[in-house]
Amino acid sequence: MAAHPNVVVFHTDQQRHDSTGVHGNPLGLTPHFDRLAREFTHVHNSFTCQPVCGPARSCLQTGQYATVTGLWRNGLGLKPEAITLADCFNAAGYQTAYIGKWHLSPYDSEKGHGAVPMEYRGRYRYWLAANSLESVSDSYHTVVYDNDDRPVELPGYRVDALTDAAIRYIARHKAQPFFLFLGHLEPHQQNHVGDFPPPDGYRELYTARWMPPDLAALPHCRTGIEQRDPAFVPLTSGSAHQHLGGYWGMVRRLDEAFGRMVDALKSLHLDSRTIILFTSDHACHFQTRNREYKNSCHENSIRVPTLFAGPGFENGGALPQLVSTVDLAPTLLDAAGLEAPSTMQGRSLMPLVRRQPVSWPEEVLVQISEAEGGRAVRTQRWKYGITALDEKWWDYPSARRYRETYLYDLQHDPCELTNLINKESHQKVRQVMRDRLLRRMVEIGEPRPEVELAEPYPQAQLRPPSEEEARR
Image (cartoon, rainbow, N blue to C red):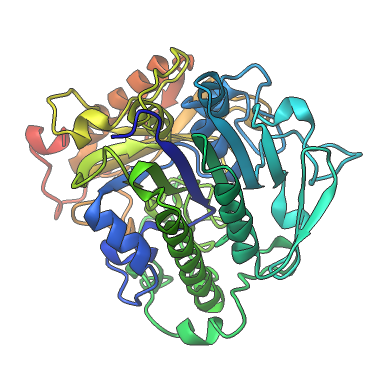
């Protein structure tokens, strides 16, 4: 392995894990992602720890949870003193660059959503980005800002425009180790038109094609408890029938761009000494769980495609462990031979990649802050969540009081269509998962809250899980 490998992060926005072939998508959208996932290291169970843009990005840049970064909902700013990936690579003598969507600066009434003040750029030395890229550009009109806050228009479809800029940067800086973060907006919706605009001609290729099971099942699923359970969240058909063709087209173009970037590294003889991370900030449930496209702990709000490629990740296989966004930053540093700062709350995946014995958490913790104030914990089999009861939960990173809202058995209900939180048969599971959640919240620095318990009622046909099943 090279003493100082280059590092490239290819970051997408709002991409579902099942948009990839290695996760079962039959449409052939991601041949480049799939090839590298099979050849190197596929993080099979990768989850965001905050299913909304700004907070998730703050977690990736710092290896900390959003309640620690200071950016626990959109519109706030990453603490200027937070230690970022750029800080770590700068200190090691790397060139550092950021291209694309940032979303970590507080909204500025004078500068709007575009240029980012120097103190909120995370110390990246080369800058070609916009804070809220969807607010200052369009699918065929890409506008970003340089180090001097000057607007720069880039030609082509936005995915291509940003990828071309990244390839130009790589070609110009190949002589010295670099850390490049490429932040795409796609396949996020274009807010001002309420649509997912792919490149011309791509929507037609995927409209009325394969639909993921969690979307295809709705709105026909009902549990029969909606009249008795105040915590019941109505499920709707959402916007998938309208938007999925465009969304799949955006995913395909992203993968084509990813392949071009990998080809560029190979043509410049950099592929054997460049670490690549491909991941997304959160996923997309197409308004089936709330009026947003994410902002829930539904599986397709929080589960994202993630792979590592390059030196140190050869033949890593598909990792079965549950991995959080906070684990990605310390992994990049470890893989590059750098020490992660003590401020990072995640842990490196390198022992898992190397098949070394290591104690790894059996669950991931997720914080929610916008559509609701909530917390959830997910194990291999179960998902359990609570919702804030505080009147002004929006104004604070944590709440004092929550209520139990949902419990899903992912083994038998992978689409999360049957909420078990009120089932008398599953109270032991609920207790185990509640203990897990509260323990993890306290471990990361949140105050231990009060939790209002759901009122159970009998459901004769459901067999209570065994003690062992309850702890999976």
